[in-house]
Image (cartoon, rainbow, N blue to C red; front, side, top):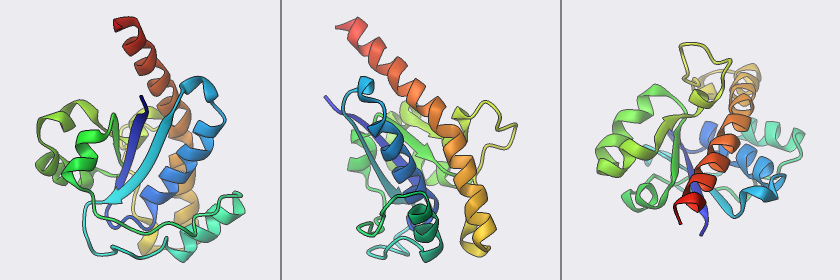
Amino acid sequence: MAYRILTICTGNICRSPMAEYALREAVAQRPDLGEVQVESAGTTGYEVGNPVDPRAGALLRREGIDASAHRAQAVTREQLDRADLVLALDHDHVGPLQRLGGSRVADTLHLMRDFDPEAGEDTGIRDPWYGDESDFELAWSQITAAVPGILEHVAQTRRGREAEQ
């Protein structure tokens, strides 16, 4: 059975797709994790159908990642119900996800940077859309710093599930 990760930001054109693609790349390097599916969505419908922000797309291309197929979507209750791990990119995403997701979200929802041991007290990743390329670089470095901790969480969760069976 696949382990499902859902990354969430506001419009699903900057942070959450960058997180989605970073995690997909990392998961591909870890066959020991088994099947892991990663997708992203936004807390709003503002950008539904739009491609990744050009600045995020350029950054991903520099990293060797093609995000040209990405199209923004608004998160649904069904996505939250299916997800084993919901990763909000900033603090302002938590409330909308809790309201939409019901009781299951309490067990699956985390801020992405909660998995970065060097993050400090403020684990939010600010929206780079309002800034320039340096803001996208900062968001990318914060996202990628959390990836190893997320992969370890997935591995531990899967081992726990196997032990229960």
